[in-house]
Length: 149
Image (tube, one colour):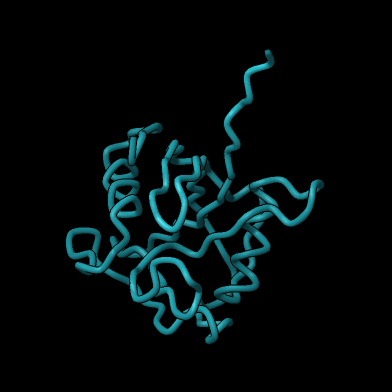
């Protein structure tokens, strides 16, 4: 009997830091973690888009900034088990952009109702727990973590 392999969903997150502050967006009307702060993020579109291409596209679509692939650095990988609404396994890749063009702004008001810079030592209480953990790992230069198992 052939053993079924677990399905793992990849997600790419954009980490922007400026003057010791980190950019977070508050989810709205998405069906997942609404009212909670996270990073601009998304999944690859189709079978041909890579995770770095996905985060560049999401940066443009969600917050109106342009990022070059040469300015991306993979700063953290998280293997995560999501409990709600389903128990999916996910691989979250957090890419920090060293440089970007444009001033971040809400580009999808139907999915995001706040976008702002927070001090690295003063994250909002309603930051998604695994995102808070990823920020802590990023600050300590920890490249890999697990959450929800």
